[in-house]
Length: 375
Ligand SMILES: [Fe+2]
Ligand SMILES: [Fe+2]
Image 1 (cartoon, rainbow, N blue to C red):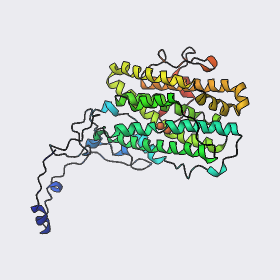
Image 2 (image 1 turned 90 degrees about the horizontal axis):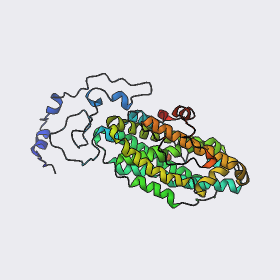
Image 3 (image 1 turned 30 degrees about the vertical axis):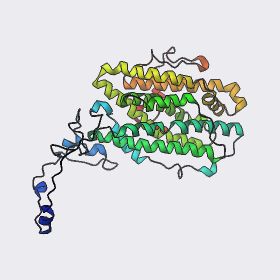
Image 4 (image 1 turned 180 degrees about the vertical axis):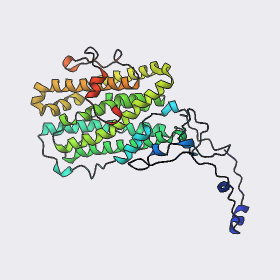
């Protein structure tokens, strides 16, 4: 612990009007560059200029003192474990933070809960089962960043700030799907152990980078693809709006994870094999999800428009959806700079479509995707 020397005489001197003012008269902290607000206002990127904008590759201290300012030679050690830029950085993180702050929405106020139509029980219950799964998985993307956030060095504060927005986003996603499951009395459905195996893999990840790759690229990436298919899955405009709003948020999280991996690999390409091994593990568990009736069949019923229709059309719809999920995931890996095409552990089971065999390219997959950062 740092030893504190307290100058109690200072209180008397101030009482007599004898201010110290050394800190003011020796001020030499000007950033040395003009700070110009952009069209939307003063953004984190606008202020990242001069000595403040110089983000170190390795943080020189473990302190909460703001970057670019002056620090005492000895400061309390905050014990951060992620002290290099490569550990946490993504080139889009400042933009993503700004977007997150400007696009917050309210699950209470912005969804027209009173206009959900009465649906046939098969559709309502299928939707409730999807909402159960989503309400179950969404909050891992709050818990994981919350677990690691304090360990991020304060010199990379923009990453911490973005993670804070994500924690709020996922809280709202958990809220909105829980509310939809209960809004018409359908209730929350069945949870499966295999789902939680994947969640635990993320939470127990030994490193931030491992957890980030599993959660952002694989877990959130798949959820993002599902949200993008919201038009196909929504029985009414209310669910369409829920999926659309969640999709905007999710695209930011995935964009961070994709660009973080890209940054980390650019700094140390030898780490690629480590990431491959994380993704091998995660994909093997997620592949099992495609064999769980509670995960696949509600989507088939919603896409086909009912239980009976699902038997005739559902396999095709589920196959298309699965293909899209895998295509978008492979494209995201390409963008991050890691080629999973020859190594993917998720077989193209439904409908017999294998995107690797089909030679699906990242361009084709990205052309069908929307959202932040092209992730
Ligand atoms: Fe989410
Ligand atoms: Fe997310």
